[in-house]
Length: 201
Image (tube, rainbow, N blue to C red; front, side):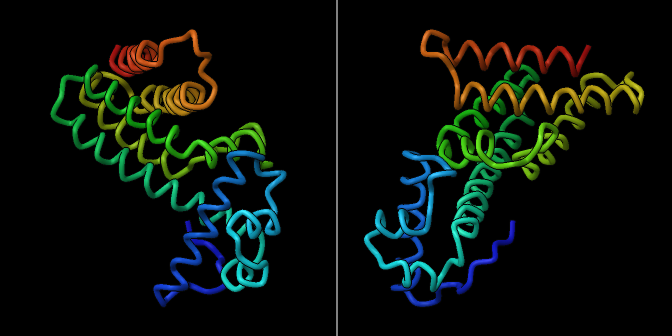
């Protein structure tokens, strides 16, 4: 995702300043949420002046856009690695590895994911992570075509549509909202089992 950051840092000192601001923004986002995040609070947390912050970012939305872009890039790299590993494994093992990788990535980017899910005005049908869903859909289509070649194109589309909702929503719930009494590995097993069954039966 492209951002509208005012000035791309070139010098080492400028790059360090941007990283300092983004790290501070992540801390503010984690502790207070998107609604309470402001450029003043970020500047205070980063121990820089607001003027220094505005050299690189026009407002908090630009800062959040950069955080989201970075989180998406890292999640995509980890997801792509999981897809490569899944291609050489038995179906259930591969699907489980993919689900576990997505849960782990979302946990590592909890502040951004939580803001996207809980606080950004996106609507009930909005996809908070569109790039990730597209990658998952491509993998799912290949998996289903291999496991259930008898499915019609319409049936395949219907199953992929539902599988995307199950995968993303389940992984977000496990990563961000799992009650402590529920075992994470067991939940991942259940999601993987539902997906494997639904896409191959």
